[in-house]
Length: 188
Image (cartoon, rainbow, N blue to C red; front, side):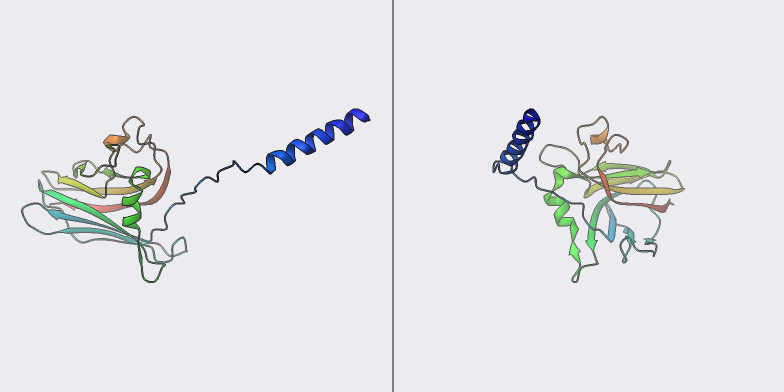
């Protein structure tokens, strides 16, 4: 009985010492962003018609499906300068999440999955470690008529050093998806 009391007293004392320790530094939690609207603007180099891809989900995780729009086709063989704007329109006025992603660029990366024959994407912006972000990019439309999906995915805290991730391969990226949309597009 004496041994059990001594063991209990030792356990209670060590718990008290650990809980009173003031050298515990709280870990900063950087939550995922609330994004209701993503607008991808593609401006043709040398002039032509700008293509805009947009998804808006104004009820957040509510029952209403996002409204997805594509302003028109891509011109075959044309190189487009792409940029992405992110908004949280649940706030009034709308909160510009693009700035937050740019400030936390080491914790974010866009991934582009482009259907066969539609074209290719190359990153135009990098974080301080030389890893891609994707807020700015170039899209080179395919040389022949094609239709398919142009998917845009923003990952929060991806493993930017995993194999293929710096080349835009999402398979090994990990992290959490902040927003993801597949746009039905065409090249003419």
